[in-house]
View 1 (cartoon, one colour):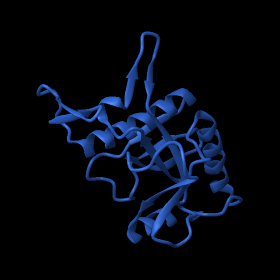
View 2 (tube, rainbow, N blue to C red):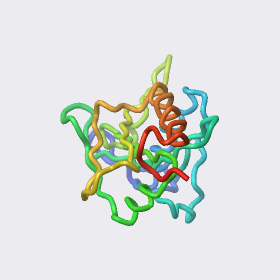
View 3 (cartoon, helix red, strand yellow):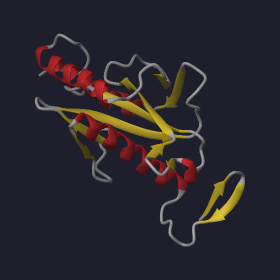
Length: 180
């Protein structure tokens, strides 16, 4: 595998076992796990080949979990533009709309889109060269793409808001999803 560093290629010295797409997928999930850890909530990843609900995992709140679809991309930039978009399949939308609990889409943007630069190791800290943004999916109107507002940054405070959405899904006050 060849990794690009500052426009020049560098061999991974036989260490890498994931192609860039799979590495982004793992990085995206790891980023969400880090935010969940900061908030003190668990994240359960959907087993491979069991993502029949079109979600990658769930955030475990006390009352019930929220479902989460995670994507990681270098196509968008952290600065500039007020939204990022992601294409979806209609079958995914139908699954999200049938959920009785909230379903969220998290887009982790790596900037720059250079695998070696995703983490910046300094003497006093290791920094993610990335940010995540989110939108609720089970209440998403019909359309071809997901529009993710960059004003909706994924943080520990976001997860507190999601927990309230989950709680509201049991009393029917928040709408969206199917309340049994």
